[in-house]
Amino acid sequence: TQVAKGDCSAVPYTVGVIDFVAFIDADLDGSRAGSQCVRGAQCDFLLSGYSIPNGTTLATPPGSGVDFRCSSTSGTVFTGYREFVQKNPGVSPPVYWRSPLDQTSNTNIDFGTAFGIGAQKVCLCYGGIACNQPSMFTLDAGVIRVRSVLEGQVFACYMGEN
Image (cartoon, rainbow, N blue to C red; front, side):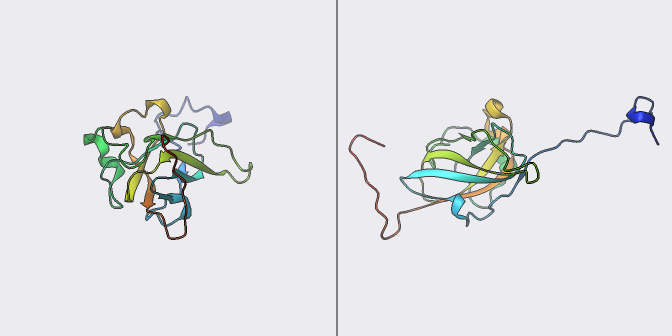
C-alpha cells in the first residue's frame, strides 16, 4: 500500500514494532587482550561494538563459565557477584562515537580489582540504573579471563591498601 506524504493513519493494519539495539562484538572465548585481567590488579573489560548506549551495565554471574547462557540468570541473586571482580556490576562511562561515518565505539568497563582465576561469562543490561536484578542481564558481552601473574611481572603491594 502506498501512503501519501508519509501519513500512515489510513493504513488498515499495524506493521509492527522495530526495536533498535546496540551491536556488541563479543569476545566469545576471552582471547582478546581487552578481555583479560591479572588477579590482584585493576581489571578493565573492553566493550566493543556500535550504538552502545550510556549506562550499559555488565556483570559476571557467579560460577558462570564460557558456555554459560546469559538469559539463564533469572534464578540467581547478586550475592556472590563480587567474588570474581570487585565492582560487579560494572557500569560503562559515557560512550563517544569516533566519527559520524564510523559509529563504532570501544569503552572500558571498570571492574575494579580481579579476585578470581579462570574465565567467566560477561552478561549485559541496557537499563542503566534499572539493571538491579540478575534477570536483567540477558545479553552476551563475551568472556573475561583472569590469570595469575606471569614470570617477569612485578606488582607493588603496600600494607593497608587494596
